[in-house]
Amino acid sequence: MTSLSFRNRIALNYIVGTGLLVLVVFSAIYFIVRLTVYNHIDENLNIEVQDHFKELRIEKGAVIFMDAEEWEEREHNSVDVNPIFVQFLDLNKKIIEKSPNLKNEKLVFHGKKEEFHPFDTKLLGSKIRQIQVPLHVQSEKVGYLIIAMSLSDSSKVLDNLMDTLLITFPIILLILFFLARFYAGRSIKPINNIIQTSKIITKDNLKARIPLPKTRDELFTLSKTINNLLNRIEDAIEREKQFTSDASHELRTPLTVIKGTLEVLIRKPRDSKEYEEKINYCINEVDHLNSLVDQLLMMARFENQKQNILKENVYLNAVVLDVLTLNTEKIKSGQINVILDAQEEFYIYSDNYLVVTILRNIISNAVKYSKPNSEIRISLSRENQKISCTISDQGIGIAKKDLESILNPFFRSDSLNHSEIKGTGLGLFIVKRMTDLLQIKFKIESEIGKGTKVLLVFEEYDNSLK
Image (tube, rainbow, N blue to C red; front, top):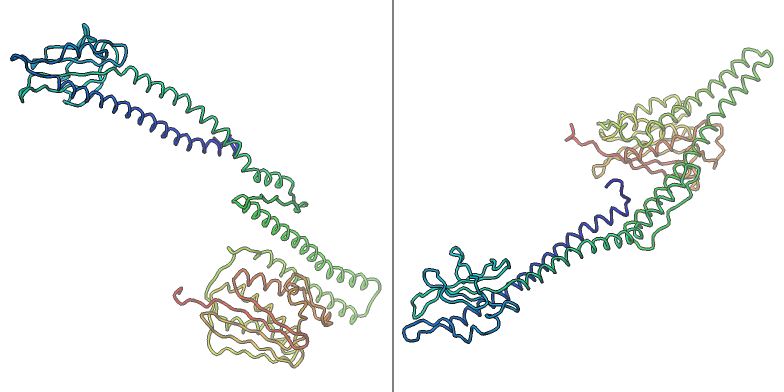
């Protein structure tokens, strides 16, 4: 079975089911015809019984079973055409009279057979249908009447019908198999298109698509689904190629700067102040490089890997305070006023490490791009079993045309000149990926010169999980 083609398996499964149906129909035809034939013969036997009952009479004290003229009728005198065999027995089962066509033969009385109930037996090696009934004259039992009819013609009809059905059955199955195979081949043509298209698709050629069938059936849906899958794969690979190219560029830039600085530094003797200045500059670039590598490793670790998520009870107030503590030096140096508006304790059900990373990226961005002597407000609130965290700053803001792009890796808005502010362009991209992974609502609003507002909506911790 496993070596058969898909088309042949469809055809085989079809003819198995159809063959069983045809077999049931043929069997029904045969048994209906057989029942009809036997009913007709039994009806004739009963008519003969009634007719012969009428022949019984008493003359001069003797019982007359049959007129001599009746025996001369063809069905009683011959065995060639529709013979009817008649035999009278006395109470001792001895033959009193019988039809001429029996000649030297006799009909056997079967004591175990029911009266007035036809049954099959044999005479002269041929099948006959026989009925035996008691005879009464003036309510007195005088003997038995046995009537039989030949089944030779009926048996031939039934045998011919059986032979015809047996010969026709495999022929029908064979015809059905080739018809099913032909139409199955036409039906699975889109599958062949899928196979052919799959063969020409490689990592360097993702443009090929499966032709959609004209009929909107299951194969149409399958072809469309595969095409959509190919579109997503192509987009993912293109994004991966772009990301790899951007990552290589971002990694190469600080390394080139460090190398160039050190080469310039060793060309001639310098004073200690200049050495210190250049070394500190290289250290800053190394720090930037370390930050970039850490973020790249984090992205690789949590890229659509839900098995790495460990959800637990997270005290959100403490997480925000810890992140603010990490940014204390930058907050003080920028003379930024941070306001935490949390009227109560808030617990969420999420991954603690990822939540810290999300808030660290957002708050560090707010601090980094805030103007001196400005304000950052962090608000925590609850609504409909959801906890909202809003982080607003009064920084340089983001242009509307860049709001979607800032979620792409390595993108940095150039709406305002802030090249002196170091960054990798991965912070918000990581935030977007992690919020999607944790199913946290993430929304960002911004306006040039007025600041940025970020909204996070968390799932509240369920006390029943304790």
